[in-house]
Image 1 (spheres, rainbow, N blue to C red):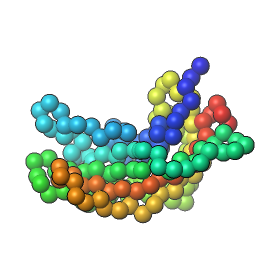
Image 2 (cartoon, one colour):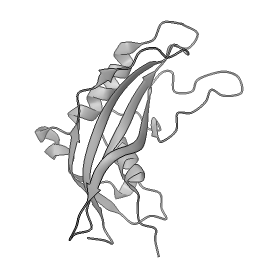
Image 3 (cartoon, rainbow, N blue to C red):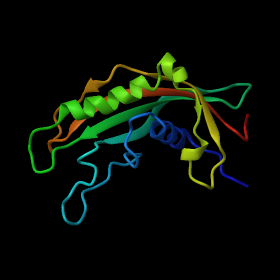
Length: 157
């Protein structure tokens, strides 16, 4: 028996399927620099999914509509100047993934879920306007937005 996916897992899977998002640049936790001090995602930026900040569940159908906080991070290795444009572009890729040309974010995300989980599909995705989040002491650039995904898992549908 497979596990039922969570909203966090579905959101990570959905973001990984967005055109232009670098492979391996999406997770629920921002990776720490390596033992050598190198930030492995410095060239690509990083998308941190979660936490769930609101939403709802279907009353009569096994659907969910979580609202998740999405943080888009970027840094310039060895520089104190935050690369705001790089973080902004990651946020814009997520917004672009919700438009009509992308079928409003509708897609099966099963391929991006861990093997031990049931499949899931997103019916719609909606993003808020990304906003710059200044003041990080580590000179990282960070843009925040909220992402609402209307989804169901394949076992509960």
